Image (cartoon, rainbow, N blue to C red; front, side):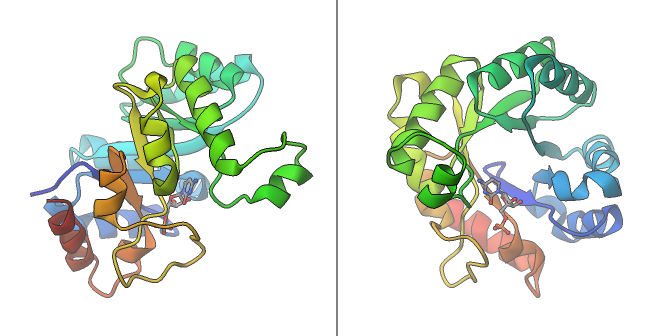
Length: 229
Ligand code: C5P
């Protein structure tokens, strides 16, 4: 049985590979994330096919950021498709515009706090105010939720801090940066196991390479589902 808490990142090169992987995973996985890397090679068509033909749930990871009017128009366009989650950056004006664009649809708007690939030097280079990243993540999460986000994307190590915010009550926390014990880290630095991420307050975990690069993707997904159970 599939558990919707596991979201598999379909970071494969094209639609055909994505469909093939979804076929291999079958009933083990019910929720897929499609990101920017797939956009120009049929990502939206893949999202539609997985949703309409295979009954899967879809997280479209677009991380929109622009002036409010443009974000609103972009989100309104995406909301015509039957999708479950969409990401935007967690800046208050972006979140408010996304909320407007998603009006009338059930699609959840998830706010990106601070990209997990950035460190303090990167933030300095972008003129982001002083302070520890974890504090800034918590502050940005609180503001995004107060401005209408349905949830936030964060590292599992920040999930408990965000869960403790009053603004986070009833909201979603979705965490990439998840690695089963013994799995290769790749470029992820601050990781947690699936069970620990959920124990820390995550509602959903996003797992990519430990599944799609595995010799036996279905077996890898099944063992994560067993860990969650
Ligand atoms: O392969 P892996 O499990 O590291 O994949 C994680 C997925 O989550 C990738 O699609 C990556 O782009 C995405 N992601 C992330 N960190 C964020 C936001 C999204 O790793 N802060």
